[in-house]
Length: 145
Image (cartoon, rainbow, N blue to C red; front, side, top):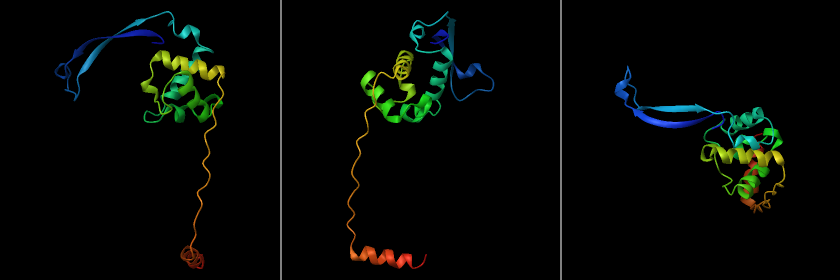
């Protein structure tokens, strides 16, 4: 969608290839375009948008929070806040689940830094109930160190 419009045309069976692959192929038509209407509203350069997309897709099985954490100094909490509040997506969203328009909108909102990150709730540490048996076992193991 950035450089061209892609259109799926038809399926090509695996019998058309030599040697026969394990999967069927397809023909996709690419029509180059001047500049995508979605990209005209980008906050920044096209190089920074492409770097952002590369970062978002760098690990397929990771969430956007994990892939974008540290990119342009974005924190994980900030990314989660933008995904949930600005885009209405889950904080566990992956890059392949977003459309091109959503990815550009995410980039624009992250770059504008208009939204404040919600701090993650901190759970108090669990109280440990040490018994005399625990302490004796700890002392017994420490004698070997």
